[in-house]
Image (cartoon, rainbow, N blue to C red; front, side):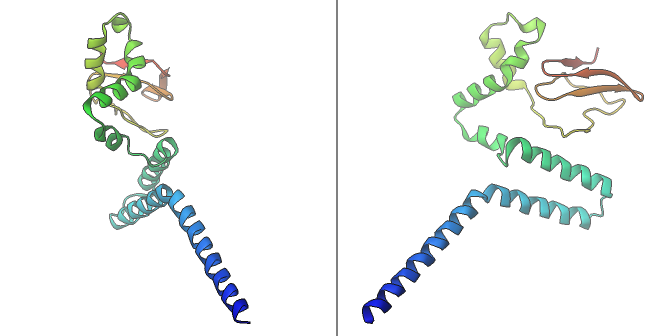
Length: 171
């Protein structure tokens, strides 16, 4: 009877440890999602505290949801800044070279010039229906579309639809 009690006790301990480890494993797998949900909740609390209009609150939440869908919680700037300078340059080249090389004036440019230009690129993520520029606002440099679609609106009419590799600059 003592042997049965000891073996049952050991069985209960092993089962408890196994269940606890499985729960910990599942929790760690969703750590990024949990962090995102906590961040979103803090943003909602802040927006309610500041009494932002509900339409603005919805746009802000949509932006964070869109960013989550694209990057799954990865902080691209942090990731790149943690790399050594040579790897930063290679990542930047890989991400921007096609779009910069698509410009007619740069198609035959040498690698040194393209490398220098990729350092000057500012990458922005816009959620659907965001305004990139408002009427009367001046565009610094050029807008190059690397993903998605951009509508150029003049008045209330869509003047042009831009897609990957399209560019827009003020004349």
